[in-house]
Image 1: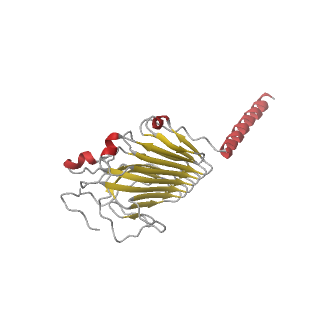
Image 2: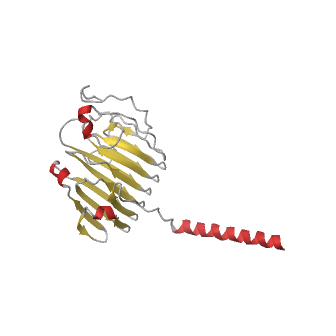
Image 3: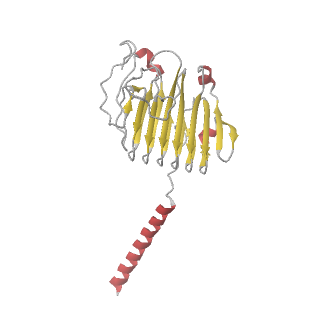
Length: 272
């Protein structure tokens, strides 16, 4: 992969090798276990430090992580200005490869994304996050001038939650077939509902500062066929603990009932 010139490209140690199901088009230091590993510290040149979001990880472009049952967690700094490698092909079925993607079958995904280009100029990042049954939570870092991001979040049965910064400007679309949608209190203070039906909600958020400095707006799309969709503001809104399903509640009932019966039998045996 061709590196950028030494004057504009920060230097970092080579990342650890990826597994055979992970494909990387650029340097990265990801954490894909159930417990997030400390991110690698890599400071950009002093003149570009204000363009970084609030993430301390190394910049990546073309990073694609795939897991089956394991969780994917961590913070990722997407730099669409980094050169992409010609030695790896994007996953099949994609018209254009995103700058970063995460995919699981059962595992949960909880990531924080920031986007900033080391080179001056406007840039757009594309992120794709998907899971078959796992829950998805994406938190966007503070928006940077001239930087926009498109995020596509999909889970067939899991909960999908998006948390945006206060200075976010753009469009958010929620779509479900048999699930539910909820806009958290912090979001309702800054968002305008453009369209709302039983299966779709379209939001528009206009921030004068970021909107004036960006050529295009941010766009986020959330979809779950049977799960719940949430959108809130980072640092203000929180999700309530997930309620157990009917089978989990039934198992809890049996456990409590059997324990109470055992105590009653033991008590009766000791008094007889």
